[in-house]
Length: 183
Ligand SMILES: [Zn+2]
Image (cartoon, rainbow, N blue to C red; front, side, top):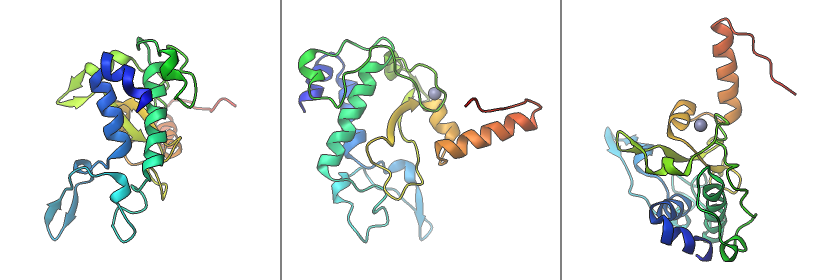
């Protein structure tokens, strides 16, 4: 992938994560129970999830679709605070030119720091790849896949961003805060 050659050189761990999270299903985190045994799948290429499969169509994506998700994640990685500068020969393969130090976690709206890829909390990375709206029938699509803080991802859970915001607003109000959404 031409848009990953630079990251593969300077930060192979991040390039690997982009490939893994764009092209493969998740598996372990699904933890479905079938016949009282934990049915956990290994990660598999998303285009092999076909109609009739319990994970279709939510986790299905074509190879080309996965490629566009990977390119978007590459933009997000280059936009993180402290990320290496995106070389010109890489930028031309990306859907947009990364704006340095502009990367925000879409959940908490705080900056995402590139160095957080290296932090691990209880063997979990500090940065996760999230489906912002996991309730979509097809969730692994451009615009719905983003890097987020692990803590934010865990807190949001299976809710969409809108559901999560409403829950937070309600929670704050129940704790005596006045919450109004700026227009
Ligand atoms: Zn966050």
